[in-house]
Length: 308
Ligand code: RIB
Image: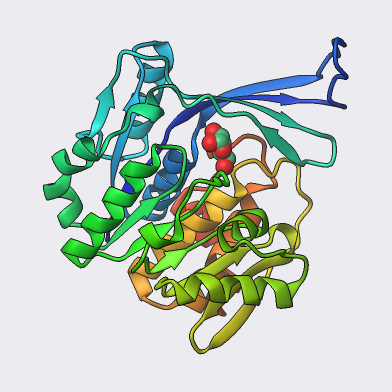
């Protein structure tokens, strides 16, 4: 099972706050953690920890964070043949987690903003050996569009997580994607329709299907995820846990979904497995630091996994 991730990496600077400061105010936060993040890297690490062979196409800067990120890819068994150095700062993400475990994230793309279509072409041979290409929106849109075209040309399914929400993302430039996995806000922006309840989600997802996307899987946070496809829709409820930090849970869901789908080809089973992996991640602090290793995950959820 080989997966190519063409996407971002960030260093996450997570402050656990009691409240956000008002303008001009300084408030003290009780705790802080630093760790590796970025939507692309998070999804890549999840796939690799679960057992996929992962090629990461990304750009790091020319600073200490770059060394940390490269070492992290190596430690997680991810190929760094296409992790490129750039004369820029590395991507960073100051993150604020409130006492209800909800997060607010700022991203500074840094080197990620320099990932180009020609960087993707340089990785073509390795990408061509993969069974799935994964994309998010923390790298330039032209690179995303180019990678989708490459996937279509090579006959490799593409999974696009259109996050963070971008008003510039054009539906007519992402035809043929096997999976688009937005949250409600991203779906609303992409479809141009309001998304308040399940009926709205289904109508908005139909707009995406009509544009040539095969499967739309909408992540609904603590409610679960809804798969909308030509034949109808399927809801998978979230697995209930006591959350301490929800940062990166969406990436854990998408990464686990991708790994399981490549392994089994079964969309519902992949969603039901991913809901367990994502729920498990929110019971620990941090982003990638909250993602279980494959063996640990399979042992912890042996009973539930037997029934997915
Ligand atoms: O989805 C969570 C991720 O968003 C964080 O790791 C942060 O780096 C931002 O990319």
